[in-house]
Length: 138
Image (cartoon, rainbow, N blue to C red):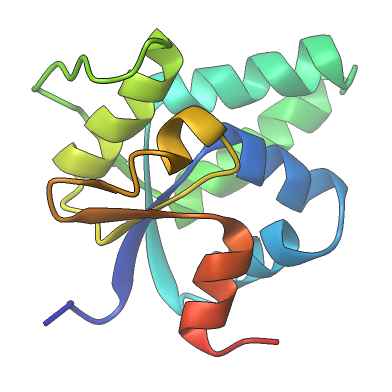
């Protein structure tokens, strides 16, 4: 039986979508803000988020710092100790490493390379829509 609250890693693509757009990724982010779930991340994942916000979305450095500081307050930051090599993209492996280190129940992503796995060990891999449905929000 899962602990309460559920422990999840939210992939960078979902965080970015939740920050910039509405919809299911924003709802996932709201469940973190309301403390309905415990989200887990790592320094490499937060660095990736900052890079995407700056390079791809042209957010200013102060805005990026504001967002990453707020997320660091909300998220449990773990230090993965086990290297995982199951995906062709090393960035996807970093997400799995954080989920494993954080003893997560779920990994929430829009990345097809991760979604095709469906599960890594006991960690279920779901889209934001699937996760929101599982929580009974909608």
